[in-house]
Length: 135
Image (cartoon, rainbow, N blue to C red):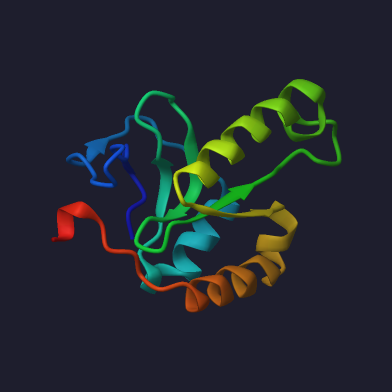
């Protein structure tokens, strides 16, 4: 389980050397997912784009599955306002164009166990994707 690494996927699907991220603060929902799905080798705060600074809350790079945990949905947080939704749409489209599958969940769904079931099911449906650096 990688919890303190940032990765940036290259356009050819390969991955550069891992870089330490200073001051990485994980949410409790991220920690739950990293622990509950450790056998799938999740990575927190995964950088998937070579030119943008976007990160995936919890990524499963070998499966190209991304999990975004949308907090603040009941308090008019970032994910419920026009600018935030627009930015999320751009990031979601970029993920799709790079061949990623995105699961959006709330912290409550993580804590209640529903998100872990969805993620485990999704990962069992998708084969491991071979990347260039594995050849």
